[in-house]
Amino acid sequence: MNVTKCEETPWPVIIIILLLSVHGGSSIKWLALGKSNDARVWTREACTAAKSSGLLERKQARACRATTDVMPSIVQAARDTTAVCQQAFRNRRWNCSSIERAPHYTPDLLSGTREQAFVYAMSAAAAVWRLARGCALGNLAACSCATPPRREPPSPSALTSSTSFTSKSVSFDAMSARNSFKWGGCGDDVRSASRLAKRFLQGSSPTGTGSTAKFMHAVNMHNNRAGRRAVEQSLTLECKCHGVSGSCSVRTCWRGLDSKGPSAAGARLFRKYATAAEVRAKSGSRLPPLYHHDNLLYTTKSPDYCIPDKKRGSLGTIGRQCNGSSPGYEGCEYLCCGRGHITKTREILERCQCKYISCCYSVQCKTCRSVITTYECN
Ligand SMILES: *[C@@H]1O[C@H](CO)[C@@H](O)[C@H](O)[C@H]1NC(C)=O
Ligand SMILES: *[C@@H]1O[C@H](CO)[C@@H](O)[C@H](O)[C@H]1NC(C)=O
Image (cartoon, rainbow, N blue to C red; front, side, top):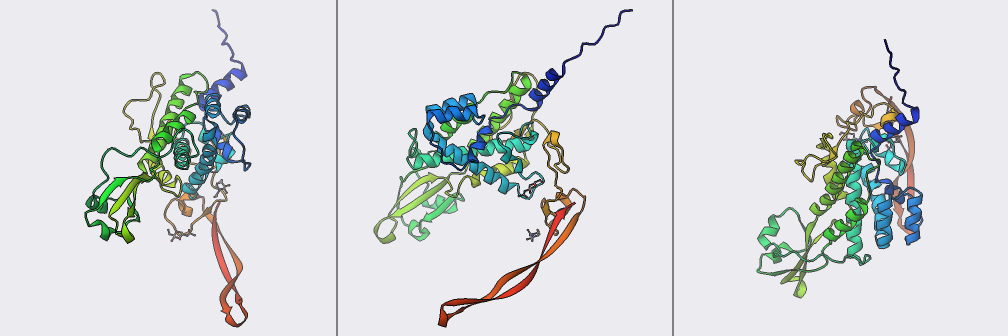
């Protein structure tokens, strides 16, 4: 009888296959641009250098060279993404600390998890927000203020009941009169900003040629788009009154972004994170058609992030601070995964009961002791 000997696959091949299947490529390496504090001048050479050091992909570098003026906004967007993500997840088992490893991500942000979906969407949202701000400030050649919507501004009665209306400088009493409304001011040009962001963000290709890599790429790009749309959805109507001494006989209105930053879009996406849908590659690399544009999609179930697991990108929650009385995510019960916690108390000395001594222009304080209790996961 003939015995066929199994052909051995050489190790390097196995490793490469594993890498391709687990790491479906990462087009968020650009988030590392936010780490350096130097105010880099974005020339075409700087774009090429950023590609050589692995921060930009080939097509992203091309977009960078074509419109170098977008890059300061992109760098800011990278910082926003990290800040919003870490704020949103500060009390969760996965607390977004691994985003700081950019461009060398761990598997939690490479293997198609829910967390990766949030970061892709958030990075796109931050890019659109910063680019729209750049447009309104006149820093970008490709855009300025938004073309006013074709329909009329809402009537006063509609405005009072509208929840998205921010009353910046409008007196509602004055509005009850028949006033004249018109579009004016400088609306945030989110549409152009979104187009610019897309050119940069979608400027990445699947890593590898396998169908898994292609599918992951399609999912990443879907999440990018969900992020861009979240900014469009967080536009609010803003108006300003004109007329003699605040009579508000004429009002100009525009659609504007929250001036505090992309955190409104971030809150929207954080809610989407909770309801993200799992998708599987069936045949080819296309997404099933029924997934709504605004949903976040993931391809791999996340670990519970309870114990350290390098292979899955889990840091574990040992040593994390938790809340001794909260029944929620930040409570010790959940955050410590049932391992229990230790209670630490320490005494601190503070200046307190300060009094202003009017005779001598000075402040006198006492020193008070207080005890601070913290809880740490086992
Ligand atoms: C986030 O989690 C990691 C790993 O558990 C921990 O080392 C880090 O201190 C945490 N960061 C914050 C801000 O809690
Ligand atoms: C802990 O959780 C409780 C209940 O949710 C809350 O009232 C309290 O402010 C939290 N403490 C800290 C330090 O966050």
